[in-house]
Length: 194
Image 1 (cartoon, rainbow, N blue to C red):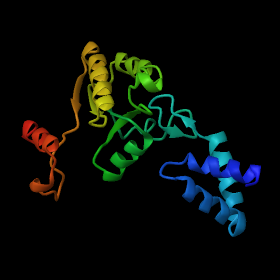
Image 2: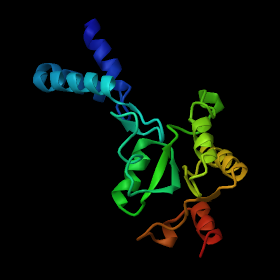
Image 3: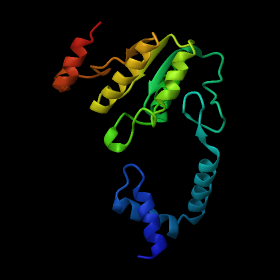
Image 4: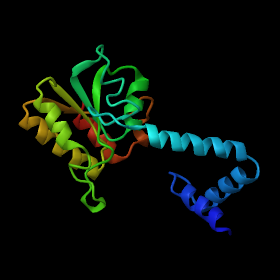
């Protein structure tokens, strides 16, 4: 395999859900049949890397120093939802039911992966709490071991700032059947009943 082709395949394998065979198929398809689309993809990626950074307030991806959600005066700046990724933020926004602001961690606490409080922007989060405008923090981390550790750390910060915090409810999904749930999910739903 040519060096440039091999480098393209290796780069494509870095994408989520793309294995060696899929990366090879994509590379050959782009080079043999979709050269104009490959050039447009390369241009779009180069432009995005040059123009998109993180919001100075919430760390979401944006082309401005402060994103449109943080600068929207119609949003409730007293309620902050902490999410792990920009995709989580997008999921909340697609529901149309949350009108507060966000803080994006870009991961979970994971010392083995080199992700500590600084890498997650938690010093910035603590300084936002210290401003005194935030009255409630909704912690929307995943129910994994790392997500729970991250939630605990965030709760310690909110407690120190005397800001109320809550976790997302967990349990039975809409349209779900109890007989199909695993024991941990059913136990969580029972504990968090209201």
